[in-house]
Length: 443
Image (tube, rainbow, N blue to C red):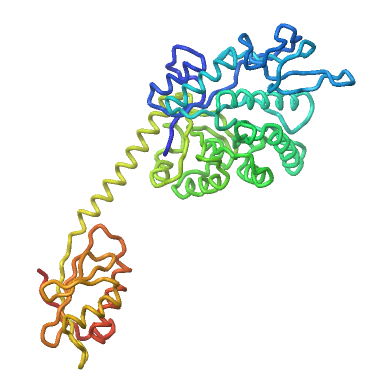
C-alpha cells in the first residue's frame, strides 16, 4: 500500500490542535500525518502540586521528565513512568497542539480509528555532534519527542542530526554513540517508536546517503529516512531518470522498519546544497518519474509532502500515481488485445518405425509435458505459454495444432518445451525439421 500524507498541520484546517489535524487529514482523503513538535516551551518547577500523580494524569501540562534526588542530594532523571513525589522537580512541556497526555492519546486513538498513520518530527534545528549546551538541548528535544510520540503510538520519530564535527570520522563516531545510547534508553521493545534519521540537503550537515547507511549498519535500530529533495540537492541533482529513483529506493529499503518512509517536495539547489523546498511542479525533481517506480512496487511506502503547498501537493501526487498506474494497466491491456489468439496447424514427417497411434502419442506427450488427454482420437496437451496443443497421426505424418495463450509471457519457455515434444514424437530435432517441415494453412 502507498500512503500519502503531510508534514505539519493542514493548511485548510480551521483548528490547530493534534486531534483537529488528524480529522482534517482524513477529510482530505489522505492517510498519513507527520506531527511536528514545534513551538514548545519547557519549564522546571517543584512537583508539590502533582505529588501522587503519574505524568499521564496531569491535566494542564505534558511532563516529560521527573528529577529526583539521589542519596548524595543530586537530582537525577527518573523518566516519566513513575509516580511523582513531593520533593521531585518536574520538567513540563507546553505545546500548542495538545495540553496533556490525554489529548495526545485521544489524537492517536482517532488516527488509528481513521486509518491515519502517525510519525512525529523532532524540532528541526539539531546540533547533536559538537557537544556543549546546544548538543544537550538537542538531545533533550529528541528525548521529549520520543516520549510524546509513544503517547500517540506513532511509528517513528524523525530527526536531523546537525552539523558535522571536526572530521567525518569523528562525526560518525559521535553519531553512533549518541544514537546507540538513545536506542537503549528509548528502545522499541519498551514501546517507544523507532528513531528515523533524515537525509540532509546541505553539505555541512550530517546525513548523506553513505552517512545514514553507515549509521544504520552500526546502530541497527536506527532507520534512515529518505527525503528525495534533500538527497537530490546534496548529490547535485542526482534523481532524474527512473533508474536513479530505483537505485535510491533500493538502498533505503534495506533498512526500513515496516513501510518505506519518504518525504517529497520540489526543491531549488545550488551546487550540492539545498536553497529551499518548493511546490512539486517546480524544479527538475519530478514526481512523475518517481511514480513510474512506485506503480510497480509491491512494498508498503509512505510519502509525506513537505512542499509549501502541503495537502494540495500530497493529493496531487496521489493523482499522478493513479494516472501512472492507469496508463500501465491500459498499455498492458492493449498488448493483450493486440496479441490475437493464433491457431496454427503443422504437419511433421516422422522417422521410419515411429508409431503414430493414439496410445503412443499420448504416452510420449505425458512423459514430456506431464499432461495429456484423448478427445476424438486426438491427444490434447497443455504447455505453459500455449493455450492448447492438439496432436494426431495422419498417414506417415504427425499433425499438430497449437493455440497461443494471449495472456502469457512465457513464449520462450513454450517454444523450448514444444520443440522437445515434437522431437520426441517425430525423432527429428528442430534443426532437422527446419529442412523438411511442411506447414498446413492456418485456420
